[in-house]
Length: 217
Image 1 (tube, one colour):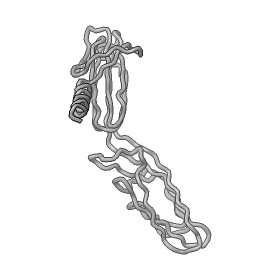
Image 2 (cartoon, rainbow, N blue to C red; image 1 turned 45 degrees about the horizontal axis):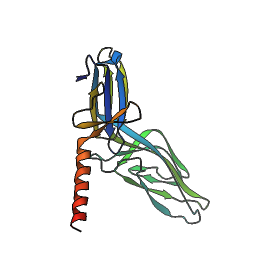
Image 3 (spheres, one colour; image 1 turned 90 degrees about the horizontal axis):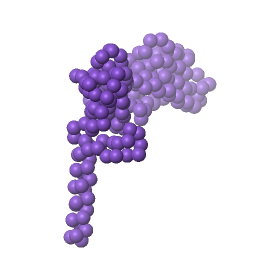
Image 4 (cartoon, rainbow, N blue to C red; image 1 turned 60 degrees about the vertical axis):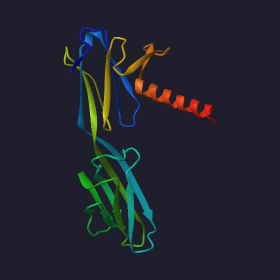
């Protein structure tokens, strides 16, 4: 859908899950603009893990790796977990991957999917009384959203941004505010801000309830 045809300025405000609202301003020579969103953009985060055990006992050690804080909780589709590289002294497992028996086993190569979810279990087996450790490089991957702003006139992509779903956006033209927002003057660029009417309504209700409680107190 195209916005702000024959206008002087187009303002797009958007936000992803648990992120602050951002703003992009398109100038007259870039208008009109198209704004499109997609929920098929993958997000990734790389995690390094290391665990060291006493090498005196010839036993198997269990460990659990939890998803880092950068992986959003509550996703409809749990994140996928990939093994990028690993070293076991002496051998062990991570998720559904087993190194097989050996002394100091390693993995390197193409990313290997080893599980799904917000944690993954592993083991390291000590076969020699020297040292015992595991070092892993993991990739967490989950489905995210993307927003693209394009100049309808030239076809040039003006902005591409991605984050955790859902993504919400509003478009206003010139110095107007989007539907459902109220305009307030400010000393900061661009000289005004747009505040959601629902936010103002909630504040008024809260203030009214507070006054009533004082009057009845």
